[in-house]
Amino acid sequence: MEEEFEGHYIHDVLSGVSAEMKKSAPEFNFYRDLHENQDRLTEFMRQNATAQRKAWHLDKWKFLPAVEKALQAKPDAKWFMFMEADTFLVWSNLLKWLAKLDWRRPYFLGQPVTMEGQLFAYGGAGWLLSRPAIQQMADHMASRNSEYEYFTNGTSFGDLILGYVLEQAGVGLTGAWPLIQRETPSTMEYTRDVWCHPAVTFHHIDALEIKSIWDLEQRWIANMQGPLLHFDIFNHLIYPLLATKIVDWDNFSDGEEKFLTPNEGFADCKLHCEEDMHCMQFRFTPKKCTLSHSITLGWKADRSMDSMSGWMMERITQAIASVRCEGSKWI
Image 1 (cartoon, rainbow, N blue to C red):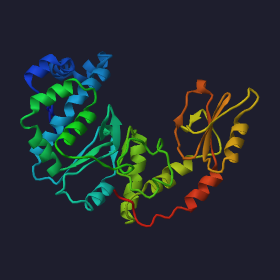
Image 2 (image 1 turned 180 degrees about the horizontal axis):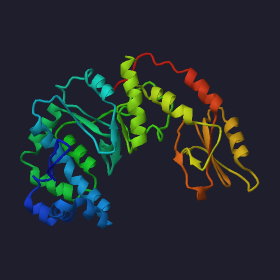
Image 3 (image 1 turned 45 degrees about the vertical axis):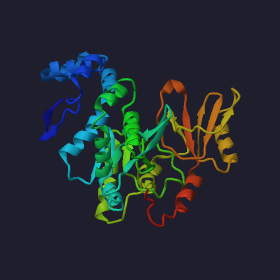
């Protein structure tokens, strides 16, 4: 809906969808409900138990018009960054990255995902388009709006729809993982493949992690230490939270499984990890031990899971000490 929030004008990107489609597509029932309850939206959302699910279904309709309207709003902009409300952007790294790219090329940058045979950029991680890329898409769509409205109506995922239309317009996706990615610092799998890459976005991130990364970024900028790397975020924010054992914790270990007898416990699981020279962490639940060669913090597990997590701290400390990032790995 069009409104102003704390001095920022919010555009209704769905306003241009045809009246015919708004009437026939079931997702727009929720769109109409929002407009009819505009003066009591907070109360309406609280009372509507299915609002979140309905909003998710409506969400697919925003992608194509949002991109077109962005170009209309800022026709002289070189780059357009699209992100969700729960996506965090490391601004200083984004600016450094864009300075290395030629905006005059039709760039489509994001985290690659393939679904239903279609390659596209995962929406939650954020995606970047250069002005020529959007212009190319807009020119392609100019005589095909009705066709793509029907395509959207029959497809479930908005980011897939955008990837398909850009591909039809001749704009291919350039993979930008792990700069742009769908994880948070706590859920990332840290390996040597990601250490030396700058971090640009994180998804599904909460207020505490946002503040932690923001504060670290500000210190980094003040000390003029170059781009903030995934290694730096791990070293400053994640490594201090790791331990040899945390009870009621899931560190997402998902590698080799070792099945244990009823008499074997956490110590036996740790022994399995010690015997694998590449094992960095493990997770124990009754009768099962799972190992991992990557490092992930994870999150608190429900007590009923009886989940305990452990990290091989000496190996991790040695791995950190051996990291040498000679220059930043941009895409």
